[in-house]
Amino acid sequence: MGRISTEVRFPGATGAMLAARLDVPSGQAPRAYALFAHCFTCSKDTRATSLVSEALADAGLATLRFDFTGLGGSEGEFANTDFSSNVADLVAAARWLESAHRAPALLVGHSLGGAAVLAAAARIPSARAVATINAPSDPAHLGKLFAGREQDIRSKGSAEVDLAGRRFTIRREFLEDIAMQKVTQAAAGLRRALLVLHAPADTIVSIDHASAIFLAAKHPKSFVSLDTADHLLTRREDARYAASVLACWASRYLPEAAPEDSPGPRDTVTVTETRHGKFQQRVTIGPHRLIADEPADVGGMDSGPTPYDLLLAGLGACTSMTVRLYADAKGIPLTRVAVDLMHTKTYATDCAECETKEGKIDRIERVLRLEGDLDDATRAKLLEIANKCPVHRTLDSKTWIPTRLAT
Image (cartoon, rainbow, N blue to C red):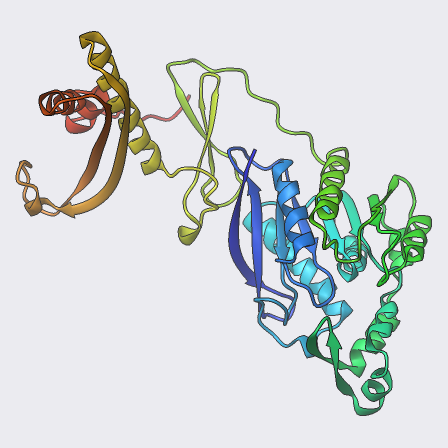
């Protein structure tokens, strides 16, 4: 299916701008939206986060992954954050998705992010299903990561700790906050489908945590063992396996994919808003389906060609077909034809052949690439034929476009 990944930013719970990436399926409207929370001190671009998000997009689910306040590309101070602020960032991300696209139907969290999505689910009513990957049942479990520094943190108010080779400032308030969290209670009151994925060999968060979450939760619930995997799913095959299982499981609890419309009349092009993103359109031509959109830098999702891209594609296709028909009819040894097209605006005074000399006009530059044993005279003739393609004639003539409201 393929996917398109777009960088986005939105305000977090404290107002700091959070860096995010939205992975959407290419060539079709998303079936639903998912929200992914990364592990403690990780980022949206870690392997597990990226692969799971991409796999969900391949399964038709648009997925937002973002950096919590003070991490990755997000603004703010990590030292001023805690578990509760992460949960609040998740809620802010869900609200942004709802306002910009569609509210998330699936919540996914890795490690501490898994505990966070369990805690946040009650505040995200659109979520139909929740999945955790190597998540702790008790965030206070993080305390062991600060071994030797916990006393300093409590007595001095804060201290620097080394986590995975990076230095982070941990405050007393952080320890107090995680001590108050009741993740198993959140799991017990989830009222949504739950998938618990956990690696039995995880040395950071033991399998006992997965058991506690699973036993606390009510059905429907599922458990999948990630054999051979480590806590961060650093082996690509382990991350891909977790992602594929998650995508398959989630499909059972999410909205059904929109059924294909019955083919419309072959001589009518129908363009309909998908309501996914600001500009995305579904183009239906008989049995054929296309997606049109705008680039991210103008507010679109870049999930399909722009209207002008489609215009150039029509001209290019018509040009190539016209040249091919002529070459075959005349027995010309043309092995392949390709057309490159570029659209710009230019001043009318720059066009020697144009009647008008005021303001700007549209300029479509068309470059033919002809392959085969062709002499100069033949190539010149094929260029002449290219200018006679029907779409070219339509664009080059006055066109009548009567427009009315449907009855």
